[in-house]
Amino acid sequence: MRFIFKTRYEQDLLLAKHGGQVFWYGALLALTLAAPWLFSEYWLAQLTFVLIYGIAGLGLMLLAGFTGLFSLGHAAFLGVGAYTQAVLTNAGLSFPLALACAAGLSAAAGWVVGLPALRVKGIYLGMATLSFGFIVEEGFARWESVTGGNAGIHLKPPSMLGWTLTSGEGFYFLCLGLAVLATLGILNLLRSPTGRAFVAIRDSEISAQSMGIHLARYKTLSFALSAALAGVAGALYAHKLQFISPDQFNVLQSIDLLLMIVIGGVGSVHGAFLGAIFLISMPQVIALGKDYLPAVVGQAPGLQGLVYGVVVIIFVLFEPMGLYGRWLKIRTYLQMFPFYRKGMFKRQKSFQKSDRLK
Image (cartoon, rainbow, N blue to C red):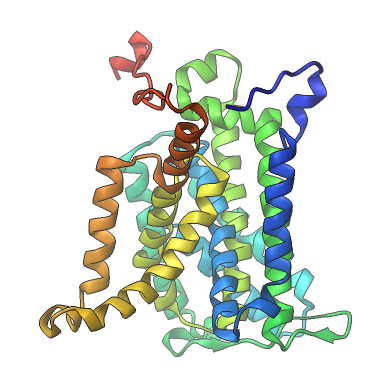
């Protein structure tokens, strides 16, 4: 078991708490940098999608995992970013400016959607965000002069300073850089007073308000930041596919994003990327397993949805902390053996009287 004895306040501000984290995160960064030379073009494309969905997962994790707000329409912010990037890029705007506009417009949409969060919560907030997702999807389909309607719209490759990214390796490094920046940004935000206010709202709104936290301001800010990250992911998603249409940003995409953070581990930055790996790899695993199943099962059109549903039920019942939570338990067990206690990670269910009466 590793014990960290802190002797100065600056140790609390370090991103890496000990040398082991520096080593393993450095090794992970080295592996991702060497990926174009280690993997084939197909697997590099899948890894690029993992990075893109990881950025979107970070945004949804900030909203649901760290602020405690529920969203069933997050694919709409992904679509706003994707279509903004497509329209501005095809108009001749450089990639960085178009990306900034995509993030800004998505953040504005998130701020507007965050307004209902001031009065509703739980399933009612989910219904509000779900309605917003339907409205945006229908808007993409009807606004044919800008979005191309159901026929979709093609994108030019990203370009900046006279340099155009046409190779898969170059676009992978672009996604990797943005994913690293987004991760560092979220980690630093969570250490700031704003991030601590988000966590306080998640744990108890009454307690947070009693400590002087402005609920309306921080809830709308959380929605805006979450939507901005989803907009960045949507812009990268559009460039990767080079073609987008309204049906790519429907409610099923929103459910996939929510499924991603639940399986990865709600309330952890690692969980966003672990969930993205699951979301991208699971269709390949299902496709490989079809050959070993009876034809009536392997060729069934709803097999993937069935597998996803079973996996979610298993995680909710047996591992609510997700993949990252399971890894924490395994690591702690190995470090503390034979003194590990089964109930170490069981969350204490003690609430204030005012919370119980709500």
